[in-house]
Image 1 (cartoon, rainbow, N blue to C red):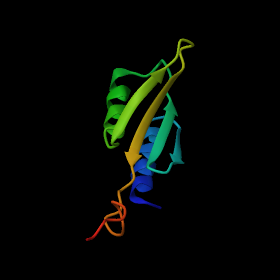
Image 2: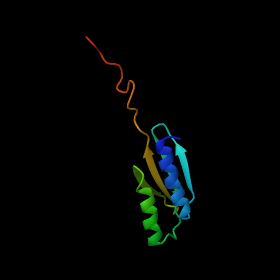
Image 3: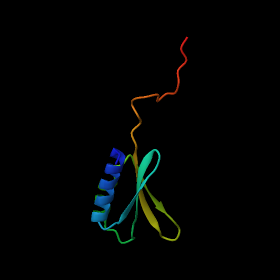
Length: 92
């Protein structure tokens, strides 16, 4: 599992431990974590949730008019440091 997957799994485990079952998905450039957030979350629990997602590269909350709230976090995958990262070069 790439490092981004390990970090995302750790975030998901912390969220699940706080009572927010989380989903982890691998994408080409990042690994994402999502969890549904109930309206009944206390201020103390929100602080713990924010500490968990603060380990991600980006995070946010998607709220709909139907009172659905989904917390999301993204952990970027590392950019390769070897090989032809910048593309072919022109030599004269």
